[in-house]
Image 1 (tube, rainbow, N blue to C red):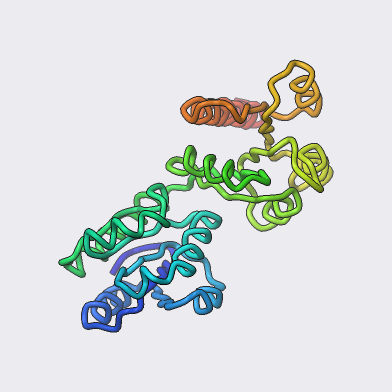
Image 2 (cartoon, rainbow, N blue to C red):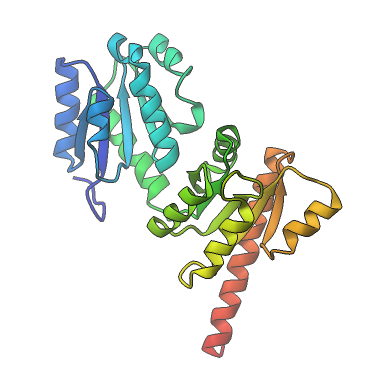
Length: 267
């Protein structure tokens, strides 16, 4: 039996009722995982527990239910849990039209060894969720931009997404991020207003914010920096440059926090 601090919840999306499926579910159950089986969007919507992973057990019926696959993809993106894909080579290839590669922890081609599947999923969860990753909240009204940030940073950081300022504020009250990447120009509640709301709350005032802007002219940059964020990113920056910027930010911040602790302790 696997030794986690608490039971892990794994969703299995499956339409098949065959022998292999039953054995797979039994094996996960024996290893003290909480298995939640879903067959459609309605059953997926009933899940209120935290999801640690989702296994897509592909067959013809599941592949035809694009609504469920899209729902799972979007939920995995928003809540940052890995997807595992099990099926024939053709089925695995077909699902790639909906499920992007950055969300997939591992694929399993039939024929499978059930114990190997369970062991591999366990190993992945242990390696990728056993270590606390920095949490980044990305806020932008563009779904394309949010997905890009997720793709660029998701392999190293836990990236949460919010498509509006109000959604961002609500998200912060639920999960405190280590960094907020905030779009400067958004409808209804813009980046400046969101930053003011964050700074006005004592519990959240110290969360670092880096602005995201599409404007590169000197006047716009001066306006952005006048709000005293920790920095700014241009939407035109290359993915590697964004990753490097965020990596360097956390290295400097961690060193600063460590220095502050040492000074307080008198060392």
